[in-house]
Amino acid sequence: GPLHQGVTDQEGLIEFDEYDLTAGTHEITLRLIGEAVAGDEASITFLMNTPPTTPGIALSPEQPLTSDDLIAVQDGDAADADGDEVATTIEWFKDGEEEEDLTGEYVVPAAYTAKGETWSAVLKTNDGHAFGPVSQDKVTIVNTLPSLGGAAVTPEQGFVDTTFTCTAEGW
Image (spheres, helix red, strand yellow):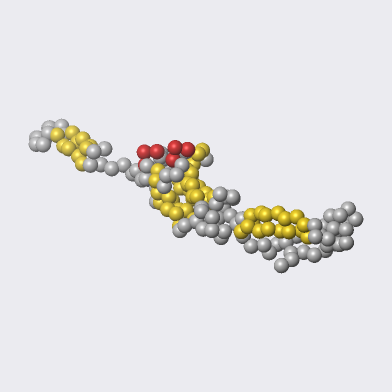
């Protein structure tokens, strides 16, 4: 049906706003009515796009140690109201600087991290026409507690005046 009917101004212009168009492809035809212009028309086709949704993202563990891999867990799938195929991209940042070699990876090996670094994962979606909102999470790497594999005492036997030495193993 008609979106708008009206009369042009003195310069032959007409303006209107339409806020109820649904997502998808639309064709609008301008039809002129009047004795001198009866039957004249022009059409335009355009896409009314709805950006895709972006699922949430969480990093695990929440308080990673220097010995932990960082794992990005996506909360569901991206969706698009227009039915467009949605591409999802994950990017990693260490202390605010993008780690380009990790783009697309959902796991950052512990060997990439160090105590005190702040790591962020940013999830982006795109339906080929527009980016959706961004989801992100961040964590700060904390120190792994030291571990001791054992101890060795030498010599194994001695006397009252023997000097014994205890050596840490697996340190």
